[in-house]
Length: 430
Image (cartoon, rainbow, N blue to C red; front, side, top):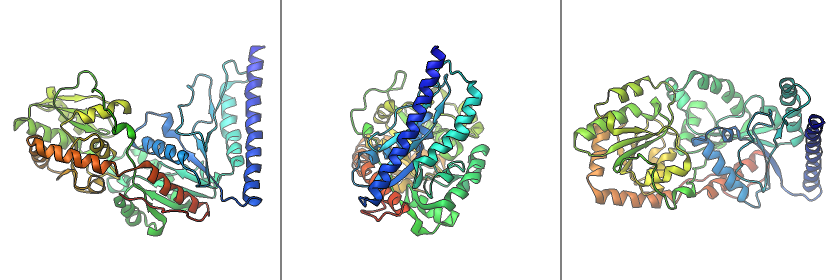
């Protein structure tokens, strides 16, 4: 009897979802046609929220949270992740907003009467597409480069956020499966895209030059800084040295980690008494990085913390003497902004989007030169007054990057894609 009632409750919730979606469609129709309200429905891919979040996931989270706080945009959002979950799967994570955002999740109960695997196949392959058709999205918003082919039929057009073009500029640094996914999905998604959001002017230029997209379709919208990086940073995790330089990002070739390790060896040889703390998961093609780490004569002064939850990052930034971020290519460079918000001076590369983010609040070095990186770092750590000035300048600059303004510009892009008239600026640059 328990299995029967659990199955009946699940089917009842599903039927209630269908009825509620139809009622919502009718109310929207009435508001549009009878009341004349400008209204658009946006479907959003939120799969990154179901994994350990890195840069793109945090971008989407902060942007949606800011969009949910806005009034007067005429936008409603359907959040799409895992619609149907098997009994053993965990519940979905919290979402960034609920005022204008709806996440549909149906969790099969333990003891579901029908065989789970065939039931999931039918629910995901038949029922889920039907529900998305009933949602009546006007636009699909793809905050992670592209909308998958399976999502494209469920809206008239797409707005995609392009974070960088590393897969074109440096394909050897991208995992084959990731590269294949880009090649398979990006073209159709961009073809359907009414508008494209680029997180920096550098990325916007690359989109125009490398992908052949007309500039009028590309909107530069800078990212913002999470308020967590502007408050009390707290204490760093146990085991972190008293004096250290910091690196935060995925450990992969594009992030120039091998040259960071070589530069740190030189910095120690020239008299720096502190350590190097690496924060980030291992990425793709890490053989040279691992080898450089293993053979480094200062290996005992290098601490690798792997993935660190965002709550612990402000303390790591605030207590570091400098952030080392001489990346080879960045579409934005969120660690730069986070470090500056914590008052930590940054050493970075003067290419792609990094000067656009850091402005005059950084030490710029040649990322191809370990000697140049080391020279810039040592000059900084040996001059407390210079570090203080850069730290203050960084705080001032980081405060200019605001998610509310990024959300306002993104809302205008979404409105235009849906055929609604603009009510404000559709770009945001610091």
